[in-house]
Length: 116
Image (cartoon, rainbow, N blue to C red; front, side):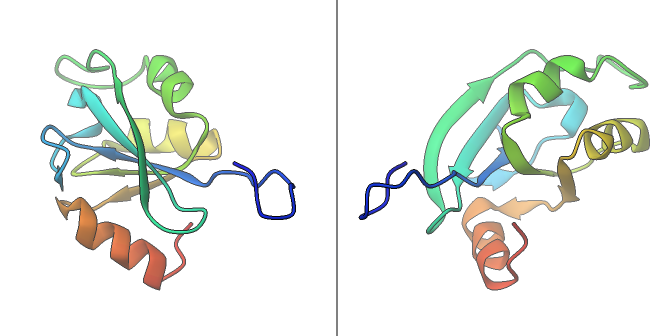
């Protein structure tokens, strides 16, 4: 992303686990679709990233594929996340939030509260 004076501005990406692209409605381990927004200026939709779920039941490991897909994001928003997955993501410098509901409303709260 380039600014008016020609400098490159770093994107501040946030990933939302969502089935429909409208609501955060997916558990981290079952999320197949991640809706990526850039919060550098405003909440601007960037892309959808697809991946197979990292958990098929009890989730206690194998989070590397999810991390590799989302490692350029500052934060993840999921309906639920287990402690091992949250600890893994946090230990790899990603912020993790449980928040179900409208992506638009969550994005507004992110901006108002300067979460990222």
